[in-house]
Length: 199
Length: 199
DNA sequence: GTCTATACCCGGATAGAC
DNA sequence: GTCTATCCGGGTATAGAC
Image (cartoon, rainbow over all chains, first blue to last red; front, side, top):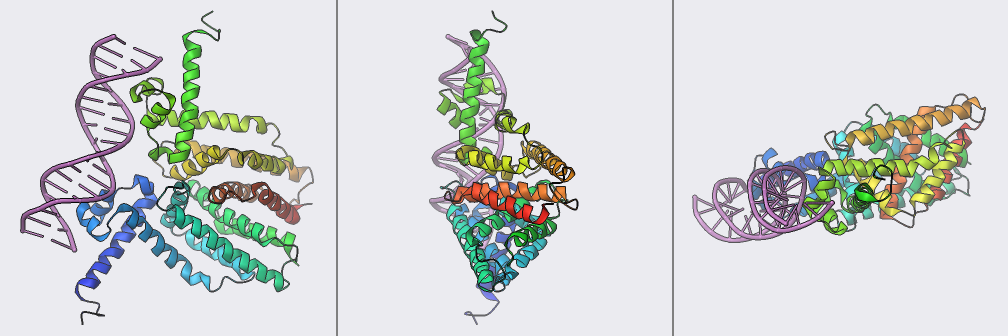
């Protein structure tokens, strides 16, 4: 009963944790990491600041929990399909979805810039995230070349960098100009890349 | 003598101001606006915090001074040439130059993300900057269409958005991965756009 | 033009009661 | 598990002397 049941102290604590994490996501996306305070998060979730620190020993720890949970939730459903030319259309779906969750876009835009400083607590997280994102893209493009869909002289690394840049840059621009049609922009990007590289 | 000479109190104050602004640029680019402190800037420039406030009445005022001066200095030499297809190669030159001044890239990457919050003191500055950048790009592309260099069905707005996104996204990525070859990536972007849109 | 001193506020983290 | 109280550090901005 106490080991795997949904009731009992564990279930309650786990629920609290999730509640805290999603509240922290909101606060960090609105005010950044440095700008958002533990007191603010605590009060929104109905706790004192000390009460919040019972669940997460430090602000840094809470930040990493937010980042890791979201990364897992946001990407897991897509990972399996990220192969061949399908990768490009998948990215279109990602921005389509992102355009419906401004908080997430704000979170990643704000924090990825803030964490460019090497001593930021999330620096390693984003560095690794860029690395793995790039590796996935490179893999998909190499598959497309081997499948004869792209010309053999295509440079997978360069395209991966460019595509990642477009995704990040569009989302930042979109924060300032919500009327911007991100999926349409991605379409144009894909068409242009294909115009040059299609076999 | 007192009106236009390089000596006297005005020249000294002006020099101080420039010294402060360039120091503030360093600090804000390393630690962001919220993260950088007036005390830190003051101490680097050899002043007390109160002494610094004699030159700039508030931290917000100093931030805007930094932003406006740099914007003017960084873009002025290029503005005149930003016409027709030349615009694209000009952007290549801009990133080539930016790759030699990491401080500037950090400043714009960090602050443009931080200032996406509508109540940030630099929000209007960046909003206006995006607007004018986009307008310039749109103008250049329209010229190219009229000159018969690009196909008539080209969408100038969409290309302007995409190109701006690439510039911003590349620079952010470059902060995490300094080996990234930004000019080469821009070249690839230009070639791809031309492959699809050249007349 | 620059200083010291200070007012005032806010942050994260800890101690210890309940 | 949650609280109150507190420590300690840091921030901006102001007052007033030099």
